[in-house]
Image 1 (cartoon, rainbow, N blue to C red):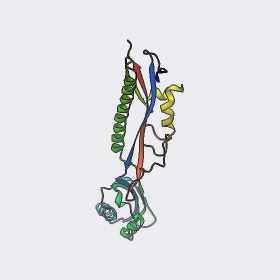
Image 2: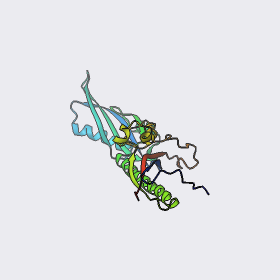
Image 3: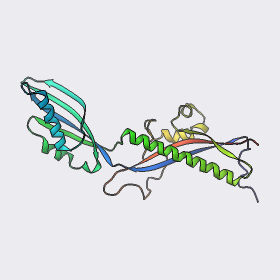
Image 4: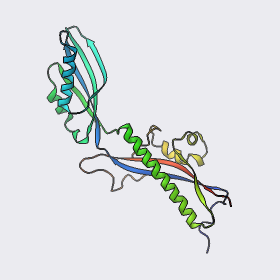
Amino acid sequence: MTDPLSWLPPPDDEIVLSLVEQKMVTHETVRITVQVVAQRATNASEDEMRFKIKDALQRFINADWRFTNVARQRGQTRFEQITVQALARVPERENVQLNERADNVSEQGLELISPTATYSLPFDKVQEINRDLRLALAKQAQAECDAYNAQKPGRTYRVGLIEFADTPRLNAGQTAQNLRAGNAYRNSAISPSVYAVAQTAGLDEDEPDEGAPDLGVTERFWVAAQVTLKADRP
């Protein structure tokens, strides 16, 4: 019977694989941003003004609010206009009726406008997901190697190199061989520092297990790598 693996390279050669590992992540938090526009009389204390802004934000959504920008402008009247950009990360269930809630806490001289919610994950969470995916892909590479070794007794391969798709050497190469993983990765059109991608890499977007219950939002994360299996010399 013909050896099904007779096409494999000689023992002193290498096998190059392009592997992908993926994970579906349901967002448990959202990032809320809102603009606070307040008027401060010249005889009002700074502490009083800051307290009013923070109190309005807490009544809007009880959270750890942080200010990303504060702009002050003196008009023709005795009032100073203060515009504050505020953000907070809150449980996903808080993403409901944001405009109505902002209107309810607004009052004369202090208004919350343009509240928005985005489903971006915290940087630490993205790093954790990337680390888990890289470890899973390394295990996948070892499983591929073990499968080759089991089918071809006497020829022993080992995982000699794993290059993830955003590594400088892989990106710098121009040959078809060393860009197979890199091309799939770059098709995502996102920053190389983040592997998070949905609807890319030729993956089936109609899989029935995608999505989350209870109005949740699920995002696909994935990593791609070029793996080199090296054969031990006899």
